[in-house]
Length: 292
Image 1 (tube, helix red, strand yellow):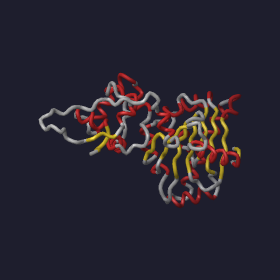
Image 2 (cartoon, rainbow, N blue to C red):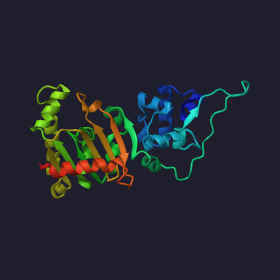
Image 3 (cartoon, one colour):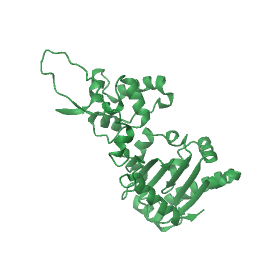
Image 4 (cartoon, one colour):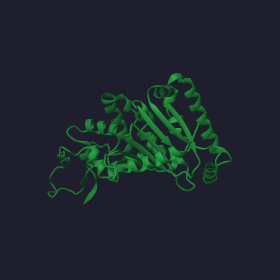
């Protein structure tokens, strides 16, 4: 009988199968391996998906590094393989922890992503995504960013101000906002049940912030391009360095923060990866957008 992953079996052997105990051990390892990961342990819901085997793809690379150091000899791919949870055939035999599974040399994150049309992670909400992959992980080393959505709070509000200014000085950034005076944002505002003008205020405020930051760039101002569009909003799209896409759906009557979020990588095969599908959508919206 299959009842979870190899990771679940290993954690049970160490009595770390409860979320709180796991988080303590995670931080202990992170202080040695990567101090930026301290406090970056998975949410409770994500942790139990790790154990149940219901995760699509592999966790964020930072998580994979911590887990591989937590269990020497194990690769992240092996930790998330299904694992039998049957009692030993000999009832007198002592329980034996599962041994590392040898993986083919070419089984990499990229290979796994290619088998899932480039999708590497799925989160039930943007809140859960932001906990798992904070904005510094997305933007600190980025050299090219392109985004389309409603008010683009992920980069305009959730990324620290000093880091945002540094990003704008070194990177090429294109931001496409939903028109704060358009019909589409008013429809969305009514659908989510906000007071009149609520979403428009967010979009307008973030446009003003980015416009002021662009003015401060001087000769580098042309590296930041701002546009807006007025079409029914279906996705929030973020592309980083032409290799990573964060896609969030907009569902009926559900706030953006509460909507599912997908992370995908460019596989190099445009006929079979979702990155290319959403990049074409962004390109179409960008071309028809109004320059700010």
